Length: 201
Image 1 (cartoon, rainbow, N blue to C red):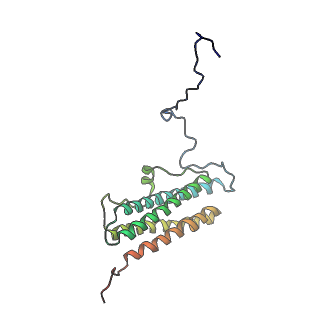
Image 2 (spheres, rainbow, N blue to C red):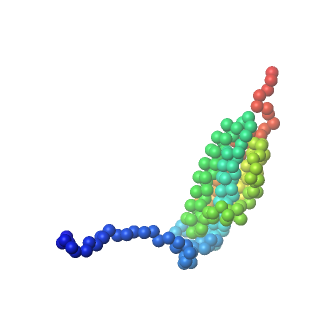
Image 3 (tube, one colour):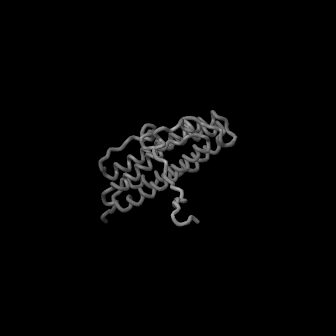
């Protein structure tokens, strides 16, 4: 302990965040569109690369469908508002889970998952909807079109993954993405059948 009259020093460490490190950032740890053999999962580079390319397309389309469901959830109107409002949000949550599953598979394969909205917009094959509010049948038609695009790709990707021996990617595409999208197609399609809500006797 210092005596009277001796200068007192502050022993506490002054911890401050180091900001703006992105301005002079070094080279990225991994470039988008490449694969690394960081994880020993028994697949050659060319197999990993093909699967990562397919999965990034599937990821971009799934992110777009997820967001299309949220747009529809917010903007739906009409006599079936309550049912569709809840259904669209349920499907949004399910697509959000698929987004995470697909992205994690890409990382496991040694790839880099597409992540930001502007990058997704460049890659996705899902048509961009207008900013306007549309009638519920039009919303549903857009959703069904997006599902069909994803499901067509799923059949192609599952076959390629099977042929290349990437059983993990094949299983993800079939068991997770394809089955979830087929089920959602069923639930959504039933809202645009040619049948009135009520019928007089």
